[in-house]
Length: 310
Image (spheres, rainbow, N blue to C red):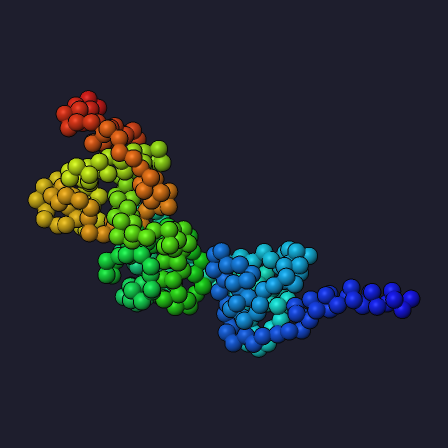
């Protein structure tokens, strides 16, 4: 009988330790609002409270899987001491006071800053200053983050500081494109520039790679890109034929060879990947009409096709 009792006590020791670790051991919480970002793991959330994540936590969450299902958002706690179980339970119901910020594919920084201000999140100047204050690992021109403002719908807690908003948006780009995978940041910046043009030129997946291939061939043979979208970006409106023929802007790819100084929007991940992987084809020209895209090898063929559909 005595031996059975000893065996039972030994068997209960891990459970006792588990209970103490999850319920009795507490850490100080000195902030009322806690942010959980998209992709945050339990381990990362624990680190915000100086809790250690180990085998006991894995076992506990295996037994209580609902507590591991934590969504992004803002959570409210009372300042004071808190246990792991109290923390996990408190993270089951977000404190709903989020503002929805949607960045569509092809959005520009200028439009985004206006949208952020209209939503009451931060004024334009404050937001630009916040973007510049981030230690962002990718190359970009000063004051210009076009290309990196990742298209997504973000839930931003009301009252979030501008720098935190900048970290969330630029951080999402870094998650999708880990900087360690792109050693040549200048080349990657050129890839983003080209992808941003492709984003404007076609919305069809089947044509993204082909259009990118046309532009890559033009760049290789030192031929003008001749994309209306680049000058349109600088003007903030449609570019008229006379402007395309006469404007000396570096964004006018009818006058200047090569890529524009910056990306002209923030393209989708799909467009960036298709552009990077695009191969040159035999085509040097393309145009769209009625939802259809026509490709040509020569300028004469290009003009002939255009005339044939008028």
